[in-house]
Image 1: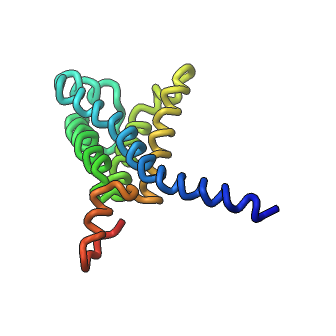
Image 2 (image 1 turned 90 degrees about the vertical axis):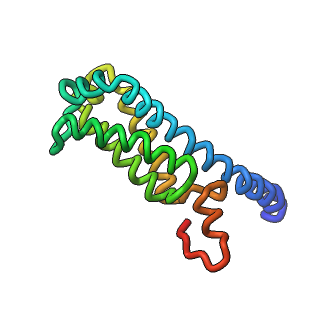
Image 3 (image 1 turned 60 degrees about the vertical axis):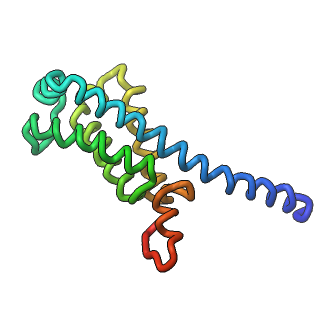
Length: 156
């Protein structure tokens, strides 16, 4: 009985192992694209961005203008690194922090009645980023290329 299951199970595992590389790449692109688009939108209308940070977002500990610069930088810098899989785990952790700060700063809206779907999106993005943090960016990443060099000590 177990032998009968072992052969198709082994084939499935090999296929899924191959697909996992593409899944990791897709996950990196999918979650990063959300933040990259947001950052690009912020720099396209900087006056609106400053107004949002002044009037709507409630970033703790930072003055609104500094929060706008830091948040926008994080939304533009970390997604590029995550997509490339360069310092993949650290980059995903940085983008996770950007997401967490967005949830904290916008909690009064995200936790309001009727905004459950919007809050769940942030949780889903956070989960995707944590998958990258814990499992790495995958074989289709700059990290993996750097780690393959002879004598490399580049972490994957």
